Length: 168
Image 1 (cartoon, rainbow, N blue to C red):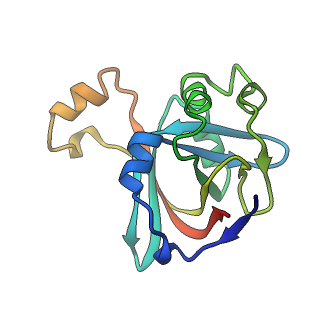
Image 2: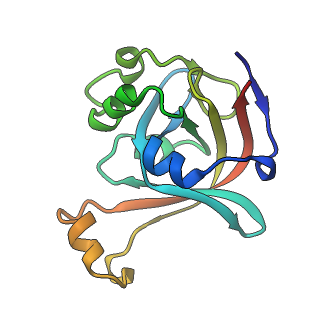
């Protein structure tokens, strides 16, 4: 099966279900070194007259180093398959293990940032914005206790969608 380029405005997908229930892999790096992590927070929309994604990465995550040092990243969606592998990628650090080798994921290169052959949908993003979440800006203070009890804050990344690849 191959990937085809798809106009993001013509996608007929439910990103709420895909991100929250089926998860995604956020990946950055190159042929020499990459890292990926599982995420169940994020979204898509329109900002600054651009189609964008937004992703959140905790400052403790190894993947943050890769997003910081690369201009592009990908969001890979697998549907309901590979939940075991995505769970592994979300619970192990690339500092300590080789997630690609351990899960059997097959990296694909050549579209600005790596993604995985097993994905059903890939969104290639160019970084536009990065900012650490500021505790003082959170209006619902219950969020702090529930999501940040240890002060491990997320960085928000907004990325312009430069390509969408769908498996056919």
